[in-house]
Image (cartoon, rainbow, N blue to C red; front, side, top):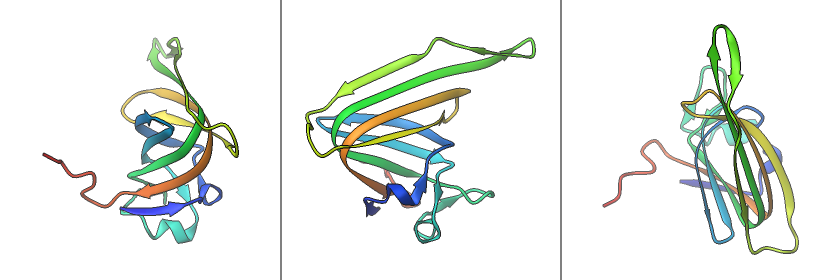
Length: 139
């Protein structure tokens, strides 16, 4: 795994496809499956890239979280019309109180027709870039 600290201004999360998220104590981790845009320097560090030049298989990590809000809205097509389901909302409060930055981003969930909105207030951000076989099954 490669870790890049404080690189929020070098990535663009406008259309990411997210997987699992974990919130423990005051750390939030969100898996990005596909569609993360990066600058050229970071792009070279990724194993997974799609045909359009977007990367994935990484984890957005927020340390010292004060606020973590996640809203997911699933949708489906019925009779040619898009139907939106009721939003599912998660709100977590962490222990951090000072020196935080606000992060807002959106995208979708991997494997679901959906819209995701995420708002986090945290003290620090890091990007964990996973290797080809990470995370490996552990016994």
